Image (cartoon, rainbow, N blue to C red; front, side, top):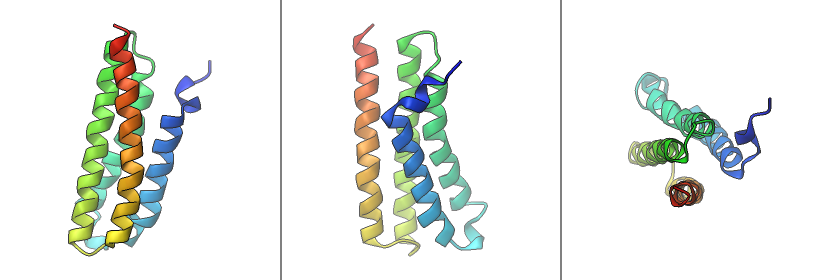
Length: 121
């Protein structure tokens, strides 16, 4: 049995976003943030892809749309964490803008996918 979510652009993009943020933001943060902001950011990043995957095998489109909504909430949490990273001097304005563009692309994909599922009800 294959895992259909692995074929979807949204899943691939979410994985790449996760990897980019972990590699270029989390790695720069001080050890003092390990159990606070770093932990929160990692959980939110993971939650995006985990919700896409978990929702993909729900019985109804309504249930799946709920998981996409959860992924959207986690994405918003990541953006808020990035705002905190900017405020605390861990990233620059240019870096924040780069990740905001990627986050907006993911948000549009999540909203569009969820909307198409809700319209099929």
